[in-house]
Length: 147
Image 1 (cartoon, rainbow, N blue to C red):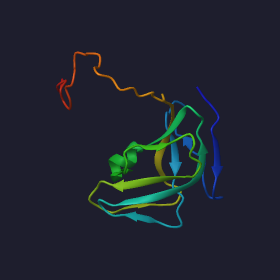
Image 2: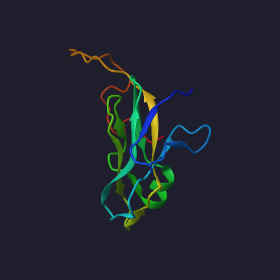
Image 3: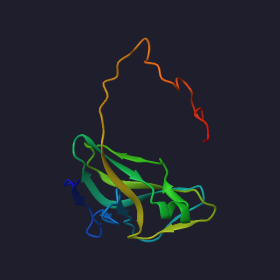
């Protein structure tokens, strides 16, 4: 399924998000820098993309790590998953965190994250005296076992 998403290039050097393959769920986001950006081990840097989006109402833009960047260089979004609400019109920034033990460098034009556009449900929260029962119940972290 495809749908148009308006993208404003805020800088003439900015690149539109692009899918790496025909069946890719995430579109690559590209760094827009004025030079190399070094991220120290344990450090975080805000990386510009030079774009703004008009996410359709009823959808959300989700910014995820690129698997190669995360596994090979230890770079992933600091907030794990970034959220772009449908009413946000500012520049998309990626907060890249260096989880590794060596400095990493981001260059202009590097693919730094991937963007997934997904539908969401706006909940109408209601206070309740009781919740419906389930087999799991209140079992928390690891309560369903390892296998």
